[in-house]
Image 1 (cartoon, protein in one colour):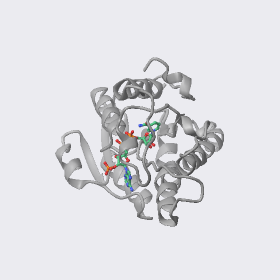
Image 2 (image 1 turned 90 degrees about the horizontal axis):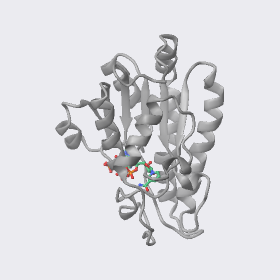
Image 3 (image 1 turned 135 degrees about the vertical axis):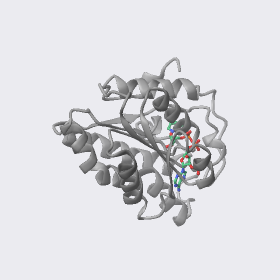
Image 4 (image 1 turned 135 degrees about the horizontal axis):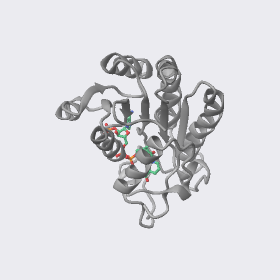
Length: 233
Ligand SMILES: NC(=O)c1ccc[n+]([C@@H]2O[C@H](COP(=O)([O-])OP(=O)(O)OC[C@H]3O[C@@H](n4cnc5c(N)ncnc54)[C@H](OP(=O)(O)O)[C@@H]3O)[C@@H](O)[C@H]2O)c1
């Protein structure tokens, strides 16, 4: 169990649909927030909800900057939500080098580096008995790689593998890593790809219901959120 009330929570991708909904729920539950996204103006508009940290994850100093600023603003970290991500639709051998690099940096490398940068703060939280947790949104593609989504699937599978291994390593330190793998969710993400065009998807999950499920999993100490955990959302 991780107490939301009184927790110090960093939401990355806080300007996105799921990030916004998750931040709202954490705030309503009594968490103090640091919100990271690319758009400083949009973060400024939400200054009442938490400290804004405007950073692009393709900047190699972003992980250290985000974690450093959030830890300083909140006095520590108990909850980290990794909800930034980009999608691209491609066929095999079609993806431009730069696009592939951006996809892997935002979806896999930056989240991995953020977990590493946050370890001292998460260890401190665990030692104080606050049961810290990192929740990352990988998605169903991490376990069901999908044709036309090869690069996206690979980037999410890479992060999922890291979370599984790092979660095993950190469990003894009292740090929980939670990999959330919802299926297609109606956030509009598929309509703003880095490259390519989305195929027609069947109706997806309701973003508000997915956010509810994610925050419940944080609070109730769950250790896995496979696609089936979102049935009915
Ligand atoms: N929607 C789905 O079907 C689905 C299913 C499973 C998993 N997921 C994952 O859930 C997460 C949230 O997705 P969403 O559906 O809520 O999409 P979204 O509304 O497009 O949110 C994506 C977020 O990532 C941020 N972002 C993108 N590129 C960035 C960069 N270079 N630097 C910093 N931030 C960057 C966006 O910032 P801006 O606001 O500045 O663009 C936005 O905050 C993603 O990781 C996605 O892969 C989504």
